[in-house]
Length: 467
Ligand SMILES: Cc1ncc(COP(=O)(O)O)c(C=O)c1O
Image (cartoon, rainbow, N blue to C red):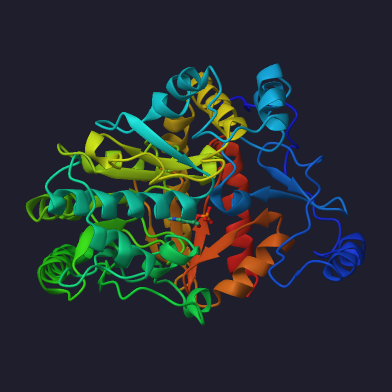
């Protein structure tokens, strides 16, 4: 297949150790004013192109980490550059609106031709936000307000004096219990205050931060290869669902919503079957608890469907779907009009998203459609998976628990020396990320093609041979 972008390099080129002398000097300078302890690679964004990331020493790496899974259509994509230079974009950037108060005249059109054009089936409205954590937190707020509105008897019922007084004391009124959001163990939903209470991936994210007393259910730990462990895996999923139901019915702070990632990403690329998610939908519906699907990392094509939850074939859509990362903008989709709070200003902030980023998402969607990038990702993902499957057979212990079959390029495997594996990868010309404790996670862009997969697989084999 012809390359999507002719200006891309033919392959990686590693000239120095990474970081090289120029990067080292720049990092020392930067560290005086900015914490560099999480720095992975200093990047020259002017020189990076397509699937290739370039550093200050001129090292060119095939990037299958893509800014933590957030670059959809390549560095310096010409179509996005064109959108960036448009009058609409310039106006959005220099006249940033407070969207709740002063939306631009054409905001409905920007939404309909962009964010809402790709709305998940059954959901036709959006609340825009600025990042993944923000999208989740605002969705949680919508869930709390929805539940209380039901308890009060409808949108028209006024708040009582007691409710208003206790709200100012950070309390719920006498006799009414607090509500919670249920999440799953090893999940990741962000690091702002509210979202952090639902994040359960690593202690380092949560230490010292006050958190809500909210329930967590076990996420089924599937065993691989799936074909060999079918019965055990069904049992693990059934046990997890029973736990969810038990917590809904018995947790001392009752949940009004369950939030779940279609594939737990930061927590280690943990999958569950479509049947598990269909049952979770049925269970939440049965108990009148909302289902929030967090597609911040899985959304926008990477799994070979535009939204990963399309793989589940739900008849009854999720109540809310949150998005960010590859969308560049963020927010939550919903369909039920009752998820709009009963009064204005209950769900509000200064910017409420960003029209510039919404325009960018529109250009990204156009590019995805023009090049049929979701189908591309499904096809290339199958190709890549089968090549890594062959590596797994050839190098036992190095590509363990290979997962993500039929999920586009959203592929991962475990390696017992994962951190060193990732460090070595740079020397072989690829930039790869990890997730959880042991997973090597692949998150190529949607413009990743078979010839890129060949380069990646060759590098993976070289790493395996190099121990
Ligand atoms: C599934 C999921 N939800 C939420 C977030 C938080 O997004 P952000 O870092 O933009 O706040 C992330 C980030 O990695 C994520 O992977």
